[in-house]
Image (cartoon, rainbow, N blue to C red; front, side, top):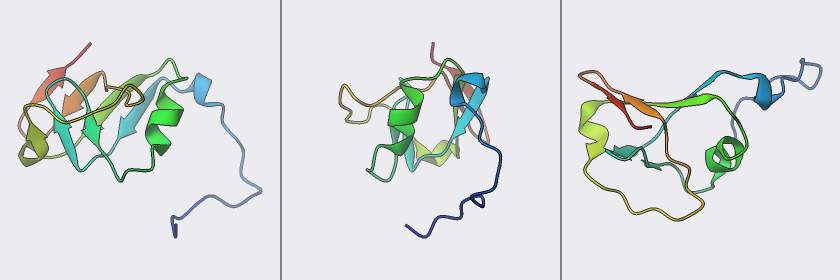
Length: 88
């Protein structure tokens, strides 16, 4: 998908050892759901990690509610240029 990745010789880090994940998105709702690019990469990772999940974006990317499924993992906090919302 033309995403830059670390070289194969890089040290691997166990996601279970990470305390906080900063998660991008195209849009976020007030319940912590996010609209991504539709492949589910972040949701598959986040369902099995104990760390906090923080969505980061602009206030213009917030909406009251986004459509979501049972496989979508809500974030624990949203941080924008104007506000911070704690979800859980």
